[in-house]
Length: 139
Image (cartoon, rainbow, N blue to C red; front, side):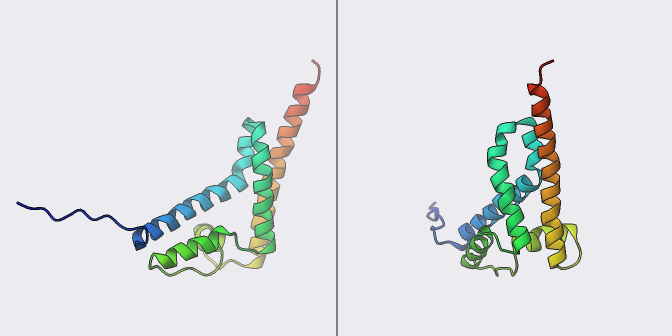
């Protein structure tokens, strides 16, 4: 009895591009979650602020300016190479807002989301600074 030879996908196989696009989506989603909720981690691990503050600034600027994150064109490129259609708009519009809002992303909602991320992080960092100041005071 003979078996057919094993075949493995080449590096130019559409499935690999679709998988890479899915990985980009996962990384993008994790980054968005870190921007919005990373301040909660900073409350516990203060040194994480050195990573979170620049990430939060970047996320808020992207949202308030209405820019697309560089990961969005990368994902679209990988989807096209994988034989899928790229989407229009940005990551938040395509993945996050359909979960949060039934309506199309409008500019006021983008500004609201950016402002919400700023407010959440401002409150969390205020708590971190307040806690650190209390810890430095002599008893």
